[in-house]
Structures are given as structure tokens and as C-alpha cells.
Length: 203
Image (cartoon, rainbow, N blue to C red; front, side):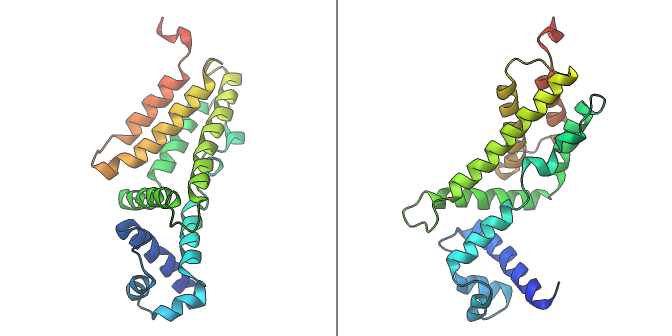
């Protein structure tokens, strides 16, 4: 990474942190430049406006955050299905440090709120975040359909089960923000076990 690329990356990371701390509207270019250690006009070499920089932060946060990145359905077999669901979910949950997870959640929440304001320059933030979340639900549905083919679950309520999995992942990421510390591994494993249980398993 050359100096120019390093500076661009530092601007993105700094802007993300400032948005998490102060919100999009209060995180000024002057604050960003001062935190990065450059002059304010230098930002315009990388981004033509604050709006373009904010859009870049949003795209950077969501980059690569998709169901397919963590759950590659074609790699699932009848023999590895259950343990792979558990390990893939834990990889997603454990990929970032808790502080980083909290920052990302804070920033995404700010984008959701900002996207609904009259002053927002981009009303599409909420729709893009919604699309990512729906992507996880649809992905889990496809994965559970494969699990049904393997005999690991039955066909009843597959979409509802997919929603449970997506909501659990989301909440396990969000809970540290409000000071709730959980045994993430135990909760995710229990969720998989419960979701995959067949109707007759408890008889």
C-alpha cells in the first residue's frame, strides 16, 4: 500500500470512528482532517465532497458483508452440515474484536437514522442495509432447504427458522453495545440445535 492509498484508508477509518462518536452531520471535514493529521483541502484530493466520503464509508462497511462470504452452501455435505453451520456462524461472530463490532453497529445504526432524515443526501442507506439483512434470511433458507435434503431438518417453517438464525446472529453482534456479554459459542450452538430439531425429536 503506497502513501496515497494509506492516507485514503486512514481517512475512511477515521471518518467511520467519528461518525460512530458524533453522527454523520456533526462529523465535519475539519474534524476528520485534524484527526488524520492532514489539511482539510487535502481531503478533496481523495473525495470531492463530504457526501462522497460518507457514501464511501457506507460502502466500505458493507463491503464483503454478505451471507455468501461466511456460509458457502456448496461446501456443505450431509456429514459436515451441523458442525459447519456452527463453525461458519462463529467465524462471522468472532472475526472482529468486540470494540470493532460495536463501532460498526453504531455506524450502521447512524446510517439507518440518517437515511430517514429530511437532511439526508442519500435515502438509499436503509434500503441497502435491508437488502443485506434479507440476504442472510434468504441464504439461511437455501441452506436449510439443503439440510432438509440431507435429512437434518423437516420442511415445516423453513423460512421462520431462517429468520431465527439471521436474528440470532444480528443480536449476538448487537448485545455488547448495551453491555450484555454472552457465551456466543453456546448460544449459537443451541440455536442451531433447536432450529434443526425435527418435530418428532422431542417426543
